[in-house]
Picture 1 (cartoon, helix red, strand yellow):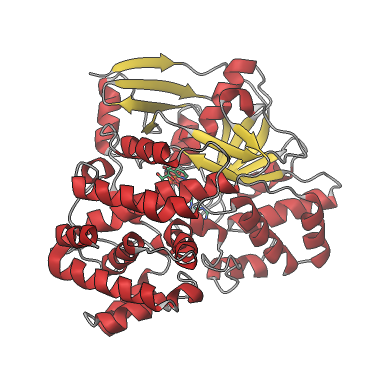
Picture 2: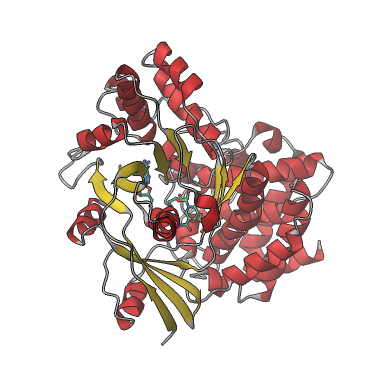
Amino acid sequence: MPDMTRIPSAEAKGEISIVHLGLGAFHRAHQAVYLEHYRQRTGDTAWGVSSANLRSSVGLVDALREAGLRYHVAEYADSEHVTVREIGVIKEALFSGRDGNGHWGRDREALLARLAASDTHLVTLTVTEKGYFLNPASGELLIDDPMIAVDIAMPTQPRTAPGLLVEALARRRVQGLAPFTVLSCDNMPDNGKRTRNAVIQLAKRRDTALAEWIEREVAFPCSMVDRIVPAMTENDFTRLAELGIEDPNAVVGEAFSQWVVEDDFPQGRPAWEVDGVEMVADVAPFETMKLRMLNGSHSLLAYLGALDGIETVAEAVSRDDLVALLRRYMLDEAAPTLTMPEGTDLTAYAEQLLRRFANDSLRHRLQQIAMDGSQKLPQRWLHGAQARLAAGGEVSCTALGVAAWIRYTASTDLSGRSHAVDDPLAERLADLHARHGNNVAALVPAFLAVEDVFPPALAAEPCFTEAVMAAYTTLTQQGLAGALASLGQA
Ligand code: NAI
Ligand code: CS2
């Protein structure tokens, strides 16, 4: 039984001045924990949260309501030490997605009223990379997406995160209210700028004066967010029950947590910095470092590990050959593309990441990380590969990763075991496999021609295409161990 520290939540009262879109595990284990720290340290109850789900999990919204909006976060330093915090900063839980009967927007009006309320000064988001409806490669709004098309046709009954932000800002503008600040907490490069881009592109299709007002008046700071928070498993709930924590809304994460935020909050913010949040002028170096080194490594493990029947991150990094691959990728391919503040030790950062990945108290499933690869690979691997090649470097690890992702999207592992491919482009990618089968010379170029994922300039690099084709052949003919061994000889 691990050594447990329990920390109760502060008192219940408090005003709502933050709205969060995307009431998922990470929001509950990261932003809400910082706000709980803040409230307990300062006694300031002003920054309570109204948290909404726009898609899945009406069950979670209702279960949180039934539990009085309190839940627990179990922070595992390792399998022997856990801190369990009770979180009470969520003051309202709303659902504006589609319910089991196909009806949309049960609490949409309540959510829009909250977003348009004069007390609301900040909106945060964790809606996943696909929740912004942006082309992952170009960053352009997917105006042909059916969800965006509905928001363009019926702007006052929005279903998407960008649609809700535009309608709420429109209401605030008509009421003569200042806007709120929009802070994305999703794993995207320049996440604030991309969110701004989605909102303004959508607003322009409704009212150019509104779009111009948003351009002028609304702050969209960027942030780098980091805490490994796996989706809960039955084993997690059982472990918590053994500690006396019976909570269907609990989340489990690592003890490590980091938040680097661009300090641009015209409507004010909590004084997060004394709780360890790093308020900076430019988040980009930190975002790029984390996306390429941590998330890029995660995605390598996800696809290579899944193809070899490996279940979790901790299991994957118990293999010396995969650890060697990560060290080579992080230090030889990712680190040289980064421009970091003086004194940043990327070797130490890489070793810290390997220690975090080895935390076997978290069952971080590779299948979860593998999800939405088309939305993740540009910022995790491809932009770095372009920079590396432009500098005359080689990208063998990235090429192996791309080959593994391509093979993964065939919906079977190397032993023929089936798995789901959870990705907005899943059908389109499955079609490429159906069309090209094992013809690697056709299959790989067909994947690299998917411009929503692969920058054309990268796909046009013969050395990249050849490296991916060679990796694909080695992987499929010699398996994971063989592919890693031959990489090691490269
Ligand atoms: P989750 O599955 O628990 O929650 C996902 C949330 O996104 C849910 O509220 C869901 O309703 C919403 N969502 C999904 N698709 C959407 C769409 N098209 N439009 C609007 N909302 C949509 O996942 P979790 O762990 O909360 O992660 C969410 C995001 O947080 C990740 O995609 C990532 O960007 C970021 N993040 C997650 C970390 C983690 O370790 N879990 C760590 C760092 C960042
Ligand atoms: C993971 C991230 O699921 C994934 O894609 O790589 O959620 C990862 O756990 C976080 O970015 C860690 O901060």
